[in-house]
Image (cartoon, rainbow, N blue to C red):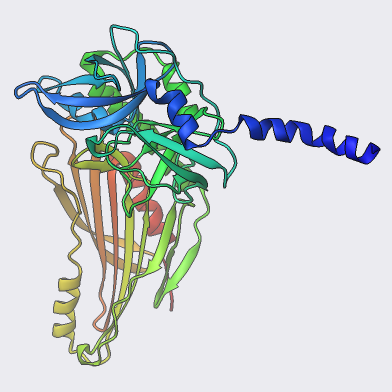
Length: 414
C-alpha cells in the first residue's frame, strides 16, 4: 500500500503535465484568433503581391512575422503597402516597426488593437512535438504537426529543424509546443524542402530594440549584415584550420562547423588523357536579403589536374578552359554594380599563382558586396592547381583577410 501511495505521489506531476498537453486541434482552437495573414499590396493595382503569416506579440497592436514576408515593402515602400487580414475577414493597414534581417524577423503594428499577445518560451528538447500555424498558399489558416529536429548543424544555431511541412504563406506564423506556448517562428524558404523555425529568443531581442527610422531601414539592414559577417568570418579567421590533401598540395578543409566539403572529381574517362581531382566546400548559412540577393554564402573549390600524355600546348588550353569560375547570382543591374577585377601573380610557398580578384557593390545596402577570387598554378607543363573562392554580402576588407589566410595555408608537396 505504501509503495502504491509513493508511486501515485511520484507520478502526480507527470500526469498533471500530460493533462495540460494539447493536440493540434486544441492548439488551433485556442490560438487561431491571434494568427493573422500579412499581405504585401501593390499600391497601383490594390492586389496582393505576396502573403505570409504573423501573430500577436508583446502588445495588442503588434504582429511578429518574418523579414522576408515584408521585404518587398521594405525595398520599395512607394510601390507597396502592408495590410493584415484576420480570421473574421476584418483587415487594416500595418506599419513597419523593427527588422532583424540576419534571423529573418520583423515586427509590424496596427493603429487598432488586434487581440491578446501570445505567450513565448524557449523551444523544447529535441524530439518534442511542435505545431506550426499559418496561412499556406492563401488557402486559409491551418496547423501542421511535427517534431523538434534539433539545431541545423550547418547554421549558427539560430535555426531549428522542423520535421513537418511548412508551405509558402506559413512563413512568419507561430510554432507552438504541446502546451500552446509559442517557441519559434515559422520559416518556409529553405531549399530542399527543409522547414525550420527561428527560436523566440531572437524575437525578444528584436522587441527590445528602438523603433527603426523609416528613412534608414536599408542602411540599418546593411549594418546588421556587416556586423554578422564580421563576427562569422572573424570566427573562421580565429580558428585553426584543418588541412586535407589533393594530389600535390595540402589545402584547408572545413574551416568552420557550418561548412561541409565533398569530393567533386569528375568521372574518369580514358579518352581524356588527363585526370582531375576536385574538392568543393560550402556553407548553408544563407541570409535572405531580397528576392535576388542572398548573403552569407561561402563557396571554395580546389582542382588538381595531371597529365603524362598531353603535349604542353594542349594541356595549357585544357587548363585555361577549366579555370573559368563565375559568380552564381540572380542579382541584376538594379541590385549590384558591375564586377571590377584585378589580376596579378602571387608567390605562395615557392610556387606562383596567377590570381584574379573581382568585387562588386550592392547598390542599396552600404558596405556590402560580392567577392570572387580565382587563382591557378603556373610554371608546370603537365600539372595544374586551381583555387576559387566566392563570398556573398560581405565587406571587401574582411574578404581580403580570408583570401590571404587561404593562400598562407597552402602547402606544396615535393
